[in-house]
Image (cartoon, rainbow, N blue to C red; front, side, top):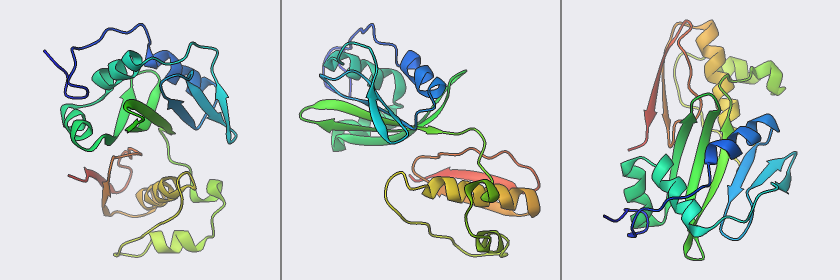
Length: 193
């Protein structure tokens, strides 16, 4: 039997991604980077810090794919050599994951997704954002470079709406990042595709 990721026989690995993701949360890292030939590296305050672990092997990264990707993501990766998905690890946290091929091997970037969206005030964004959030209809487009806070800003707006309006809010994401619990609004999360 072969795997959709590599077309090879499934592998067994001693690497446990949950241990590294737990360290990521405990050390307040924003990102985790995994690639062949390097130890796992955490991004803490903008700096990449390698963990005191052996370098990653191709079979470790293939094993992670088999353990974390849904069948549709495995198929997408086998065809496009890249896949974005959300991963919830019980007792650890929620993550956005980008799996991609680089130099013929799988590599990953994991980003922490907080369980609770921060408020607009906590983000210190202009108060006009609250006024935009209270408009009865419309679309909001937030753009910027990777890691600049687009998802965080939108999540804070949805949280504001959820606390202050009785509305039907539909999010369309790829993948779904923040999970909002209904407070006064009905929040519906939809994934592209």
